[in-house]
Image (cartoon, rainbow, N blue to C red; front, side, top):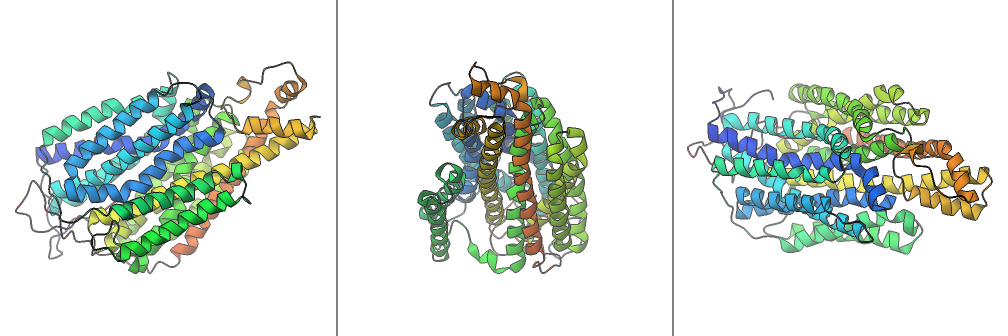
Length: 549
């Protein structure tokens, strides 16, 4: 962050935070920590979950995607509820919903109902996170006066964003004990968050207005239906009326949502912010970047455990290459934003990311973790250049609506994009894996029908241990499959190439969007309806310049 400002625009010495402000900030960071860690931690445990519960590959993708989709569908609702009922209250409710759902995810029973159980409670986890995150952000904005707010927000986003990197490491360590612990670990974090929230004595401030229930329902239905179509495309077929009915129906409902919101006095999302071209470009670049960012954790983790025969801990270290580039570029991107605005950072990030993912894809079939690290770091650097500048510039461009509303829009875009990326790339991976393995088994003498059935069985039940658990049985099919495990690992790597090339293309499209950015540095947004809780005498209601990531 480059500095804080008084209402007249001059530099002001930053006041020291009070103990209550410090405790409140720590409480909100602990609360939000759970939501960031959960975006990545489950990906590491995915192969173990598949093996123990007997889930299908598409079913496991839904376990990951249900969280992201629910988070995207209800994020704007969470922000609005925090406005109407008070952010502290919604933080506590969101924390309880999240942690109870986490415990139930970890207690999933084995059997036919395991997949439905896990998907359902992952969705309620996402709902809890959607309540929790915008409310926690509103608490930070309210508790700190203007001269401290910018630094508090920078610390809030910096620490919580960095926790995304902890997910894979923590997941690898916990999975070595039991994969169920990746859900149970949220319990002590939630307890600390609730205790600190109580100690901070945070006062709630509410806004007047009504809850836009029809808007919330339309958004949830539109997002859910469209992602369902993408997710099920492999099972139903791309030529299926059900596939395109879901996709088109979902998009049509979202279009109806947009039309409806324009005529509502108290909309769920104030769409006037899209009149600013820079804001619209920022949102588009975020969308295409997030198509790759969160899905990468799932696909790279499963690739490492299947094609590279890596353990969960080794898979976590594999992802650290990506985070090394991401962490360095995030700092660099923030400096570019301060000096020259968001446009240069977005252009650099999309180009670097596209090149990094493309080169990384080309190395996947080498089946060597060591040879891939420069390209993984390059891909991470591309995403690092994008996320903070695009999010911050979007918030700073949107002068009219509240900070929470604008952050709700950018976070909704990010999480919906992650859901679409999981669905589309998951469909591609399963289809190409099935095709490649079928050809491998046919080349080894299996009849086409048996080869297709065996390939479908393998691609629908990837367990992530390479040849450590070869097929059992004494029939000719089992014998061929045992002898072909090395080739099958290569087939899976080739299928992942399609996914990584797709991520490169997404960032390439993001570059074309970045070219439309008008450039320049944004003004600091005002916060017309928010009053600091602990400092009622403060008159400047604007958050600091570096807003979010």
